Image (cartoon, rainbow, N blue to C red; front, side, top):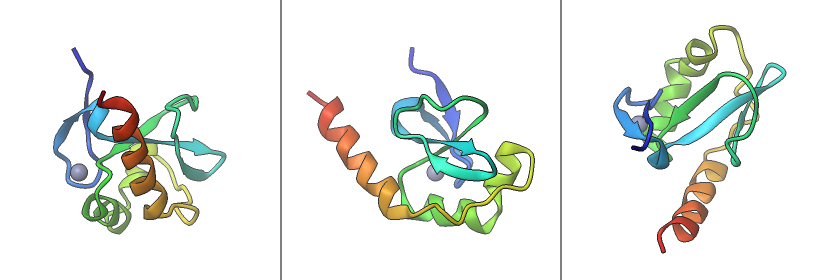
Amino acid sequence: MVPIRTCIGCRRQAEQDDVVRFALDGDEVRLDAGRSMPGRGAWLHPERECFETALKRKAFHRAFRRQVSTEALDFDDVAHMSTTRKRVGKR
Ligand SMILES: [Zn+2]
């Protein structure tokens, strides 16, 4: 069974393999490419719409239950990681 996560952008449920993980580095939200960063995580579809919705709704602040900085986030990194993952994962 693949764990089910809720995308913080569209709020729909997704299998863990279909979403990317974000975690905190201090107060800064970072893409957790290896899913190895400690602490609470936030999950998001690697879709521009979900990403922008999450930023607009301050969903990251809600996910981490405090004020966090999302300035370092760039959707291009998310998109890039998701294509890399698919290439590696689907063999
Ligand atoms: Zn989504």
